[in-house]
Image (cartoon, rainbow, N blue to C red; front, side, top):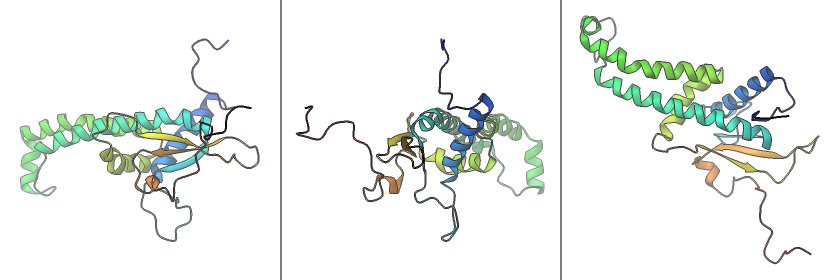
Length: 197
């Protein structure tokens, strides 16, 4: 019996499941990085990956948790900027600031930001993805209370095993909103006039 056992197994051992979800979440974050125009492996649309429906539903909570942690870290780092030094590092003014009470306040205010970064790196297992999350993705959602991603089911199944595919993307992505680049989405309702026979 599966009493109180949540989530999908996805045909993998627990350690393989964790690695799969980490890699999918990191791949979604890495689509936001800067790519060269002719670079191999560049995504067609930033902030979007195509995977199976079951994997998308499993990785979505991990991605949203990482964004929430990053948002809290950004808030604490903005509070720490009030006490930050304005002088160049290792200068006489900076060394004086380092010995002052302002440094202690700065260190105490910036500690939650450091903890947030370390937690995101622990969850994602990728420092580059965590850096992109803190620099690009989290500031975009700073005023949004939740629901940072969406899952769109594709109408065409995966070749080979005909697995149902879905798009996992960030909400409010620029090109994704354009109808010309939007994926074909499977409709849940029958078309008008197409009743049950």
